[in-house]
Length: 189
Image (cartoon, rainbow, N blue to C red; front, side, top):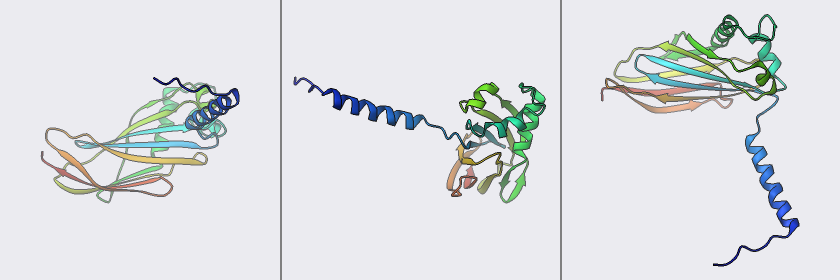
């Protein structure tokens, strides 16, 4: 077995600096943007939505102002629901070309101090009813919620049942990530 060659202190310092730089970069979160991730899941009879909103520290105040409506430093359940409904009203779901309304299910609000630091994500859960019919269908999702400069991403997931199987035939994302268009097939297993 050959021993590992010894590194000079200068070389070791360069290697450690490079590793530290890569680690810091990989963990970075934009401080001047709101990152929004929309996860849509096709389930029997519904589309489930999990919308994750992570404000950067420099723009967190724009989210917090709407979230903590009375500005008392605490988010009450009614404030969280009102905020979530406001956010949901700025997103559009179309199933087979017809606009479908979201029904708010719940919210997860982290401590406001963590949101201010840009180190926490608030979550909004909603669902929309849909009809399971065998054949090819379309889903279009548009997120227009823009409390500050934002980055958007949206993805679709499938949760089949004993009665129905789903298959994504195609999907397209807009360049800015605000829009997701999906063509899918529903069939009996």
